[in-house]
Amino acid sequence: MKDRSLASDQLVRMYGDFGMPIIEIDPAIIQKCGMPLVKLLRLTRLAPTGAAAGRLIRAGRVSLNGKIVLRTSAVISPALLKKGSALSLGGRIARCAVMMKR
Image (cartoon, rainbow, N blue to C red; front, side):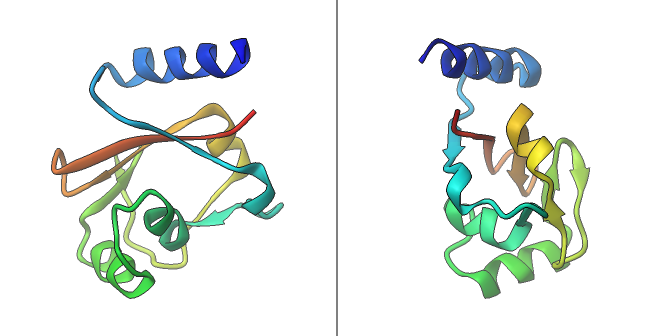
């Protein structure tokens, strides 16, 4: 429990937005090679479907840790999920921090 709250506190400090929701991803659903960004957008409910997620990515509206992602085939590594990452859609329209459950 303490590790999880420390990681959450670290994410809040890292991204400086106390209102940003932190979504924890179950490690059992993360493959060894990582998690496709399309799937992550669906899990965080930033996109209702995989097709909608693909359209958002191709339109340049999705960013991960401040960098715009343009490939629908992008995969988020387990290391990034473990330390925590900021995922945003359309700048400040919808944002969340994602991290792996401990």
